[in-house]
Image 1 (cartoon, rainbow, N blue to C red):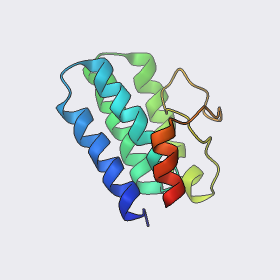
Image 2: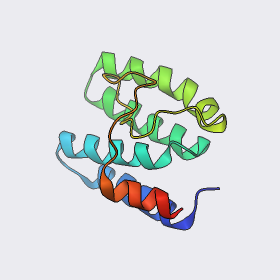
Image 3: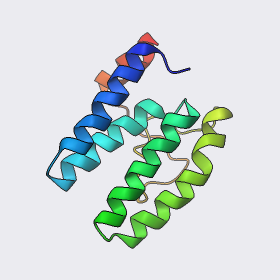
Image 4: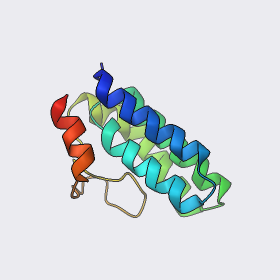
Amino acid sequence: MMPARVRAAYRAEMRAARAAKDPDARWRHLERAHILSQPWAWPHTANHVAMFALAVAQRDRREAFGQVVRIIVAAPGSALGRYPEGNTGRAGVGLTQPMPMPADLAAVLRAA
């Protein structure tokens, strides 16, 4: 189960993504939510569903296809602890590519 502090940060990022008018800002919030959600199967998968919806709304076929693949592998990857820390979850980033984690998100995850 996602710890309360992580859940609050994840939900805040998901709300900010829904509220953002600028598509780039929406993606940034979804990417941050993705980083927070990776260890937990359901939030991780839900994040990729939100990314898929945004890709479809933007008519970005490459991103939408990449998100379909990620929706399929998100839950098993989380359940097995096999996810690349810091990965933003976008289609242009390799499925297994770790990335530097923003310091504020690392602090939230460390505290959990």
